[in-house]
Image (cartoon, rainbow, N blue to C red; front, side):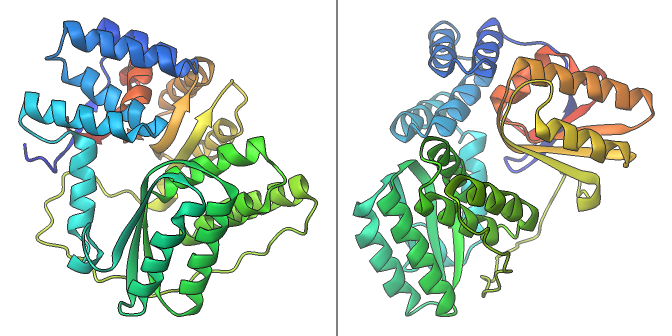
Length: 343
């Protein structure tokens, strides 16, 4: 099987004890305890690739990039290949024109805390945009946000859009998660909301934009911003002979879960149940689901069991390793199949 291949397999409910312990602790929000369980498991069982992959996803979700890079290096040395998270990043970047790749003249990155120190990098990005129609901003190594940095980034994106530039964003989902955390702490701060709304425009997510605009209006006592579609130049992607084993799913048959889901009455769960009631083939996209607690996951398992008894076909697409382990504990393989990157 090639490194770019995708495995489609049923979840079988066979987990290493350290993986089971970490999955349960992470589901409960005990992130540090989950990390320790994985690290201790790897000391005893360094040949268990699943533990490495779970630890990498945990570090990625925490934004602990120095630790992440160290574990990547150790994984590479032990197994003689890149972990799946790095393979996917490299494959995505290989599709971009050379100036937009890491080290290219039209590619700049922001890492660590997004604060006022971003001014220099953003100035260089604007300079690159004066020579390139499309530029690439990599946000995938951010660890936190401050209002000043968010304001600078939002202003830069607005300036580039107004100038007619196209912008490729990497790590925008991570930034969106950090912004969501920020507005929970400072719900009236405009800089966080405005950048979050800009990201939703980049994602062409009108329903998400309108929900977030209403949340912003209620939190900050302002008029809800109106949706405006974002139209800008796109890069010419490099698509060599594509060999693909991952099924292509129609958007009307796919439903996405994102962020953190908790409790049996989670709003995303209720929306999923409405969606599933209207579709025979239900493809549940989980790549942006950071964490789901045990109660909500059990509700999901019960819902899927009920749907399959009605004759529906369920696929769980690309959960992170921690979520996948929890679903495996709940024996979802009896009712659904999982589509995930090969290890």
